[in-house]
Image (cartoon, rainbow, N blue to C red; front, side):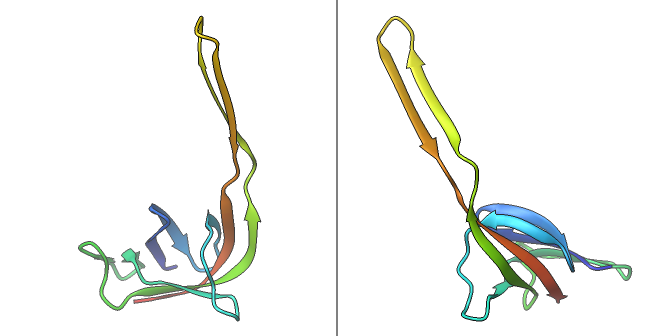
Length: 104
């Protein structure tokens, strides 16, 4: 079983083949294929390869399952005794991807 740590959207994810992830929205090609080239670590039964900061020539292949929007997060700010209240909402765009192959 091969594991890898990839970086996308400013976050790091521990993945293996067959995993389904929810990440910040990424653009796929017309076939729905994605390539993550910023691979920070690859590990299997033989050992661990660690990049500084990324491993040269390593990549993780994935396919886009769907694009969706996450649940709404309510942001509420208030200063008491000042009559200040502000309510905002935010919905993050996300992609669901399935990891197909780890190369490196």
